[in-house]
Length: 173
Image 1 (cartoon, rainbow, N blue to C red):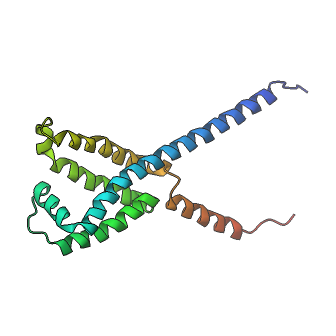
Image 2: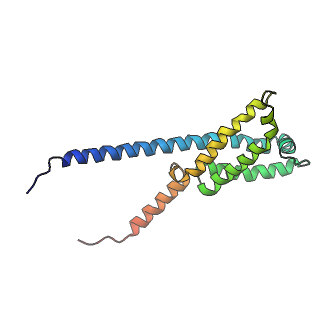
Image 3: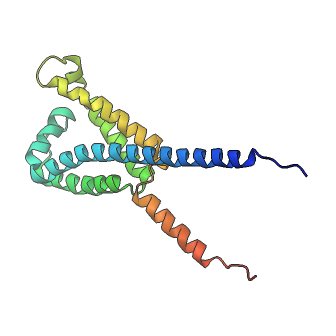
């Protein structure tokens, strides 16, 4: 028989590596949560504008999206639908769809302000450039959505897994 004195060392290395993976997963989850909250805050403010100040929101649509004549009641309706989307996004519900829709909406919003990008030094056009890092955050969230585990979807999946595990018959010893 041959004794391997290196085995405890290999086990310790594996445990350290697993702990490092857990830490990395936690940092990734936290980072994605902060991105989601940051994007969500902006979308929440835009949504509240549609609900609380629909005339202003209609003016934004007319100026940047070239859609004149939208009434306040239509803006409130859009705001209600957008609120459902934003709350779903913030909670991480239906990540593929909500992260995707948020990304598409923000892409349209970013593109619609092209005139402001052409004249950045005119006030307040420089502020419009903040749309680009937010768009990068939206795209990153969508691409990394499976790693964003501090979400309703992940919680729901873990509950379903626990239920299935509890109902699985156990062998009798």
